[in-house]
Image: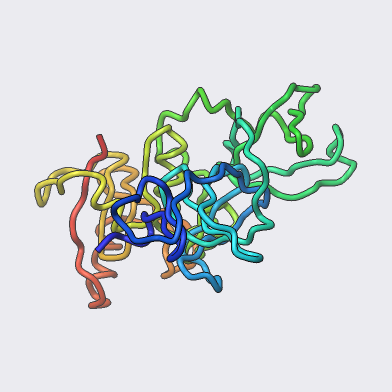
Length: 275
């Protein structure tokens, strides 16, 4: 059976790529759109909830609009689900993204004239020009120092993750306002221009074979448990978003493995080294 998270089929309308694979009432190419809210919950069910999140500027293909909801597929990772239709606007070619942990979108070219909203790391924007220390976008102004050009990705995914230390844990979260273990890893990897799925089981499947048991860990290695993922900062320390402390934190790898093993809930699966 196809994984519903990655299958652009609303139960009624399917994306053209699925023609001949699913029985749908209609097939569509997908209407281009972008997220115009700071954060929008993405849910597998029509009625809502949160399975993942999309953040400001995320590009999507709209498969079906049904009342106040829209069924979409995210361009970033192919994740599918329902979002509030009002969270979507017309497509726009992004040039920059927020590289700091967060920033504010201002109404005018002054940080004293009031903000429109806060934006998370990873939010995508179209910079029209720079006016002093502020970058002008179609929606407002952002401190230029908080942005980086999309054509200049980060070099170290762990350094990206470290900027989110202390961020509250939020199941299904994908932003600096709240994030979970797989959201942290995805943010870190997409910040370096690498493709990365949205959920830990998909990430485990995407990153190749496990390292031999006992192999020394390197910075950037990924550590897996069923339903959980962490990133090695060194051979002895890791960073992860965990419900245990409800935040993103650094933790000794040995202590974390012992604590999780003592809970009797899930076994350690091993580590993988992204290519």
